[in-house]
Image (cartoon, rainbow, N blue to C red):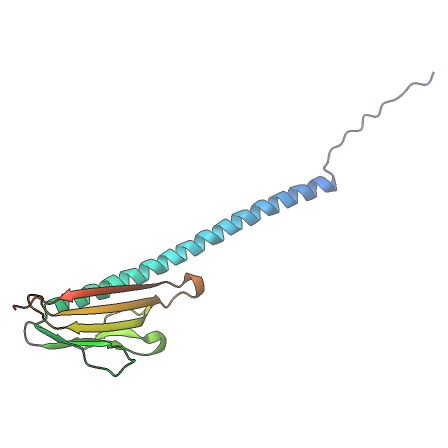
Amino acid sequence: MPTSHKSSITNHGFTLIEILVVLVVFAFIGLIVAQSVISTLRGAAKADSDARVRSNLDYVSSILDRHLRNAVSVSCPAVPPPALPTRVDYIDQRENPGSFYLNGSGADRHIASGSALLRVSADDVTTTTVEFTCNTAIGNNPPSVTFTITLEDRNQQGVLKSSATTTQTINLRTNL
């Protein structure tokens, strides 16, 4: 009688199909992780750009506020339309003349102080818009200066580039 002999060969490896399926799954997981990391890095760069521009805009606004609020008088030199007034002159409490104005060109446009002969806005931002409007005293309302400033990040490009705008009115502390 012939005896049947069962083979005791066991499988000790993976088939090519199994290996390919695992590779595809890991590639898909790697793609998702890479996209998440790239998105996080872009978000951090945009947040850094936003913070840099906003911080500089707050600094410039505080300098303008401090000097103009304590001024004895202000004037905005007239410019022919359609140009915007980009300069304000003032006389401080010690009778010293001073001014703030848009200086430079292209990416190096910045807000400068004529009284201290220095750059007020930082090197890493570009001033894209500056407009000063001087208002005379009317009745019990003191003279005032309204300014609009727009700054843009010079270190970033495209969707990562931030810009911020502020418009403020400063009433002078003068005795009416």
